[in-house]
Length: 246
Image (cartoon, rainbow, N blue to C red; front, side, top):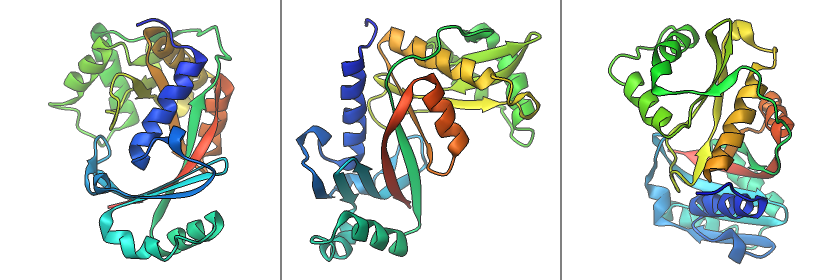
């Protein structure tokens, strides 16, 4: 597939979050739309839990998607304002608030010592993984995971003195796999604040776009550093998701 255009990235991003909402965002109007969806009873691939309540607030649009067992709760909010809905949702449920980002345009064109990782880079990645997660046991799963994603050219790493210091990985996607891809970033603790993460995620986004895959980014709303990093390479704020996990 050829390089994605800005309009294609917009469309794919909308389609991706439409999957969580259970309704096409392009079909919604300003104000509140309630969606009672059986899909909220299903475990979200790659997350290990159900998103029993998923409220997306984007500009003047609010989509309230919920599992049928919470129908009575939301029925009482049908005439409420967006602010009142959010207040009630956050009071009743243990909510995770996520800042959703959309890729707008590339701001970085030089990537330093960052490169797309190959299967042959696994020993370096395993060393990186063990340094970053000393209490985790990679036996029996890490190599398979790495090689599967490396085969798709989804793993990007930045090197310093021949050592991997920052890695952009590719977790499993709950919807639209190989059409849109989240780009998680991890940098070794003693190598942070040196610009490695920016180079890594910039190349990851660039390479995905070149392959025809839409880059995706989201983080907790209070993670100012993650939001700033995303904006520095060309993402912009898309909306906020209020999520109740079960």
